[in-house]
Amino acid sequence: MSRAASPEAFREACAKFATGVAVATVRASDSTPHGLTVSSFTAVSIAPPLILVCIDYACDTLRHFRASTHLGVNVLAQSQRELSVIFAEKPERRFDGVEWYSSASGVPLLRNCLTNLECRISSIVEAGDHAIFLAEVVEVESRDGKPLLYFNRNYRSLGGG
Ligand SMILES: Cc1cc2nc3c(=O)[nH]c(=O)nc-3n(C[C@H](O)[C@H](O)[C@H](O)COP(=O)(O)O)c2cc1C
Image (cartoon, rainbow, N blue to C red):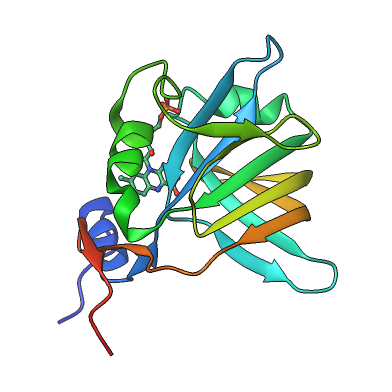
């Protein structure tokens, strides 16, 4: 049955779209690392290699992404659910006790992820209540493993087969 697209109905509809989980990361001008959990990561173009990430205007870390030339995307493995919770819920010092390293451009990248992307921000599109960051991938690292999934507001894992 169709319903008017109230914010609640739209949120519920979006929750039916299963995604992976990533942490978008950035280095602030005072050199502290920042990041937030995102499911909005999408590959946009292969040549050139472009990705996008959507960040809510309400997010505190947004200002660091706006002020930076580069960002990181860290695709979480099934075993890294705790990292997703930290980067979505911990109010501050999210990198404390987390294993990470710096990319060539200084972007903080999380260790043991399925994929780490170092990206140069090419444009920011203002869209409703989110900022869409379009970025060109400059370095890629990926490894085998099962992904962390998010569906219907819950973490899931890939079944066998
Ligand atoms: C699985 C999952 C996916 C999320 N995806 C996004 C997203 O794509 N964009 C976004 O702005 N927030 C997303 N969030 C919410 C942010 O991670 C959360 O608001 C974060 O605490 C913001 O931190 P900040 O206010 O310190 O920037 C997601 C949260 C979870 C648990």
